[in-house]
Length: 199
Image 1 (tube, rainbow, N blue to C red):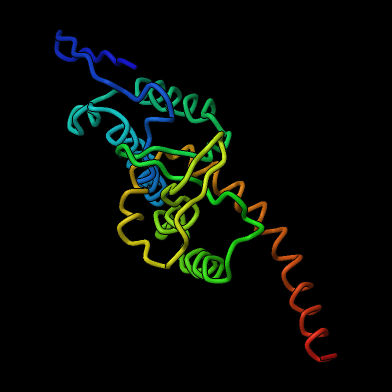
Image 2: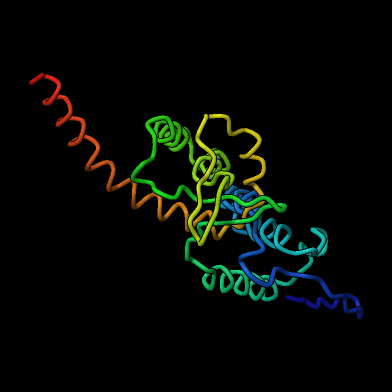
């Protein structure tokens, strides 16, 4: 999307994101950080992150213009694609969302639980690196992902490039599963303990 700004009789054109799909996980995490400051600083940093308007020029914008730009950005975020895409591509590599979260391993779940408790926002790339892994085999929309080995640091860096809207969709999906697991896992463990005592 193009934004025209007129200053001192001259009109310059700048680029603003056209869809929320252009916002990466890395940019989204910065946007979340901006919420901790003042509203003016948040607006300034948000416009700077999602456009190519220089910061010195952003500071010279009239409040009504800032309100229009922030309104457009809010519309783009509201119009984002909230459906979970189970396969994403980053720099030519294909990653698949865990194909069967009912079969998540204890190691995966423990690492996710730790990262969520230790500040999910700071650990978001690592969370995505656990949920999305390289596809090793694929046929007719069915795929197999690389087994989890706990070594996610390189993949977490790659995940910073994934679209923020996919991160949000994955989190909603995982949150709903987590609620379900938190109810069923203790019951399952209690049942297993009873079985073990009986043996």
